Image (cartoon, rainbow, N blue to C red):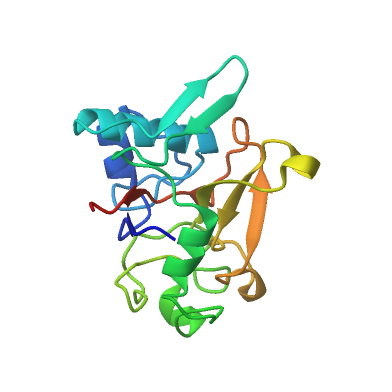
Length: 194
């Protein structure tokens, strides 16, 4: 795996709005994770952030064919691959969680049935917050193209999930252009400078 950097928190509504001038979230608050975003919304955010900071776009998007190409050598922002996300969540181990769930994640039993401000729970050993719970996080990868077509992967569990679903190894998938829900957001990655 090539070296990469991952954002410390899921993208917040404050950051999303600063880049896109929109806030699609169901639960509104500057420090809450942005949610109710499709995979293509997350990809468009990555390109807009890259452009605003003078970096190369990682994605080429054809809305007519709904084809999205990733330039894996670009210096801009992108969604993490599924393997990058899992490696970062597990801090290089094989553990399903990086701590006691109630201490590291917002999930059904402690979330008060909504998202919570990022960074309130304990981070993993690499200083990444909310890798588990609060919101699921979109990844770059297609789930299983032969069965699901262009469905994309999301990882980590959300605020309304039972304990058994909030693990580093849990994966789900959905349509990249139409699926949006109030416990699904994203964080961003970039290639490390060589």
